[in-house]
View (tube, rainbow, N blue to C red):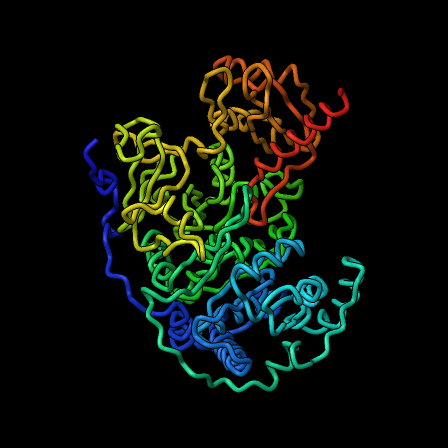
Length: 567
């Protein structure tokens, strides 16, 4: 297939196929918005609000304090926080100081935390008070020199700030008392005393790293993805061009996606800061809390993941809340079932489209058009200045034909510099500027792209290639199914066999026999699941992506135990 950008034919006149990207440090967005929207609200958090000017000043204070601790250009500083004002202040403060942000999931175990801190060489960490015991336990085995500690109560309005410690004790059965010392630093004291002047380092946006973002590490150790200032700013500018009907200084963005995940970081935090939007910060996802926040705060943009939209649509009190303020949503992290897309659009009156990307691409590379022609079931088309090819699975140097399934490779200014301290893995996925994604897909005659599945998730049963996504789409069409995931589990006869894990809608009952009969009407016989397991919930990542690999590992462990018992 001769390479051409057929998808450009579908671009509306408002979206350029190519742009000139400003080569600036990422934190300059905050400086510019603080000047343009000085008194406009930047953050809303549990009834507490911060203006753009307040956010800018506090970020400068953090930059000053980090530099006073010895942080210099290129030093790594970890953020171990949920979505809260401190997470945004820390992020931009680190960048202003010349540091590299290392986003750390607050749910990490001690082992996971220790690995990431050592691999990155992090010297300072900013964390919640309830996470301090975990940090303290691993500190002696790492290069950590300083810990900055904050609490949710630090940015709660009166009297919530007084009540919260009692809530924390009830929920977590702990009260952590933090005292200032040579290596432990109290957030509130920093914000009370630190000056807002700092030494501005010279940043080369194209070469200098802004972020070390660790991948999930479902197989082997997580890898640190090196993203430069230019990687991140170019992806933000692409996102802005895609959402061309949005108005700078006027939008309200629902911040449910965690900022420690690159998807939430780019499409919620960084885009909002660039456009002068107001962010509604949600420290954790709770469907009822989100419904209430939408009803009261009237967000216009709502980046999310399919499991988030599923949870909202299936909440028993959905009809009590007005969601009509929502104009546009881009869904990522997992395939978006068509039924969910249509239901959510009906409830909100807004647009919900599927996008695609990876941590290694800052993250977005493709999306459907929000207001123009979209193709259901497709991830859409590449964003401006982003190229995409499908390479044959058995000959990765050869391009696949139109409609032929192969490995997706992408190229563009948002593609990572490589993996931190891991040249071998970098060379495995970066070839002549092309990022080989490990995802299987194809391009149709019109230039729209489709994901078939992860290369590693493809099931080979009895010699047949089976793509879990295809089976999952059929399952999601069943009126009684809320969530579904399909995995290939070991089978002595077929090599692998298809197993479906099902979460039913509340009040709905369904037997394996009835579900099997339903699947046989909609799938070829070899694709029909041989085993069904009904669960109350499915394991997920922080961004709501269902952990298929964890389910497979559970199955392997179970089969191993059964074998041992038999022997």
